[in-house]
Image 1: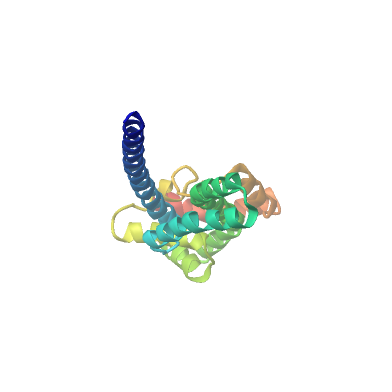
Image 2 (image 1 turned 60 degrees about the horizontal axis):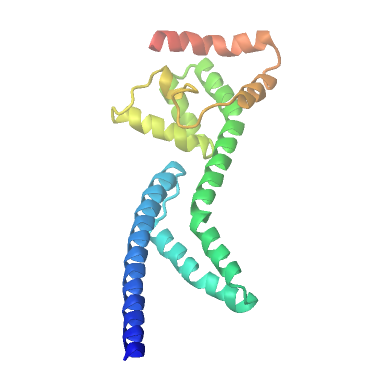
Length: 208
């Protein structure tokens, strides 16, 4: 009788633990899904990657469910399977951060030549906005994507074309000191720099 009571109590405790584990797992999965979709939507839009966040979530969830089992079957180490699941869980955030950093580095590498093209277009007689439009039309991403976004916001009235629209402090992709050094290295002398930027400054002073 005592053994039956102990067995029944153990089964009840195991069932209760399973229920709690399932509920905790569902809550954890729901929080992970909500956070994943929110971050994916924001990060993908910032990177101009038009991918459905739910597709990425389903792919990531399938990888977390399948790859650790494969690692465990191949290696026989359950710790390796747990480590694989943990890596796959944090991999999207690391990937977003790496892609964003790579995008910023590419933009900063393109910025000196783009500023020279903008100065040359304005010196040739184009207005500031038409000069930006020509750069967006003839340039290469990702910098042209950011400039196109500024122009679209200006056209719909979301963001007026002011100094903050293209200044390092007001743009989505800040210009670091290394970009300034690269830009100065491409301007041969102070005299050339003054001749290049004087029409642009006069145009900006008249426009603003």
